Length: 280
Image (cartoon, rainbow, N blue to C red; front, side, top):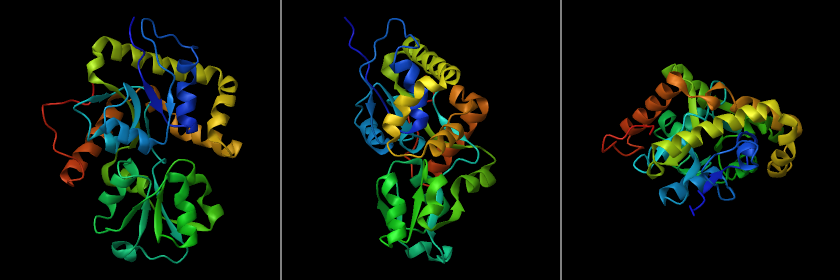
C-alpha cells in the first residue's frame, strides 16, 4: 500500500478555488492518493519547504529559489499575472525618500513580496516580518512606517486610510516587461516524472472543474476566507486565477526565470548549482 502524498496550500480564495475539485474528488488522480491537505499561511508553507516537509506545496517564487534542489515548479496552479503585484502602502504624507531608514513591514522573509521590495528599495534595512493580515493595521497605527501588502489587501487598504506609494508589481512590469510571478505549486522531484505529470494534469483539471462549477466551490472558499467581503473574495479569485494558473507557458516561464536570475544577481537568492531546471 502506497503512502498518501502530503499537500499544502493557502486558505486564500485563489488556492481553495483551484484545489477544491482535486481535494473533494471531483477530479480523479488515478493511482495516487492524497492525504488531507494542510491549509496554512504561505510563509508557513515556505518555511516547511525549507524543511522538505510536504510532497506538493504552494510556494512563493522567492522560496522556490531556495529549494530548487528538492522541488520543481508545476505548470498549473501558479499565481502570476499583470496588475496583481504587492503594494507598498503608508499613511498619507509619507515620503519615499524616507525608505532607507523607515520601518517597513513585510509578509514574511521568504515571500515574493519581500524579495520584490528588496530589489526595489535595496537601501531599506529595517524590515519587520508580520503575518500578511496584520500589516495594514500596523501601518495605520504607526507601529511601522510603511508596509508591503498582498492578497486581498490591495482591494481594502483605502478603508484603513492608507495610500499606495508604489505598486511593486507595476514597477516590476515596467522594469522587465514580464508579468509578475507571485506563487506556484511545487512538487518534490523525488516523486518522479510520471507522478509529477499526473499531479500537474489533475491540478489543471481541478481549475477547469471550478470554472464550470463555481457555485459548488463557494462554501469551501467562504469557510477559509473567514470574514472577507463576498465581492472582495470574487475579485481575489478573478485577479489571481487566470490563464497562467492553467498553464504557465513560455511567457510565464520566462518571467519566473528572470525573477530568479535577478534575485541571484541581487544576492537575495543562492547561486544555482547542479544544473537544476525549474521543471521536472
